[in-house]
Length: 68
Image (cartoon, rainbow, N blue to C red):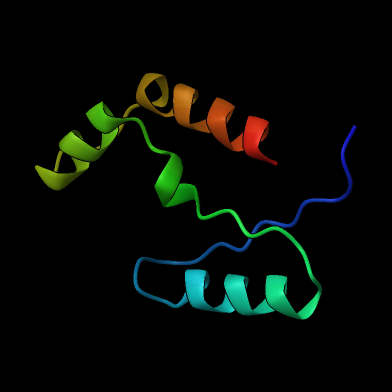
């Protein structure tokens, strides 16, 4: 089992990535941007304004888990 993980959540455009990367730098920790881990089909759906289903999110959540 790896070390601790922290999740920074907020609405789109609120600065999560900026703050998260600054905190990671401050503590010499790894920063993972969840947006970078979406499968291509999810990105396509979101760019069309189509909401993701729980089924759509499962591969993304698995990637987040693997990355942390």
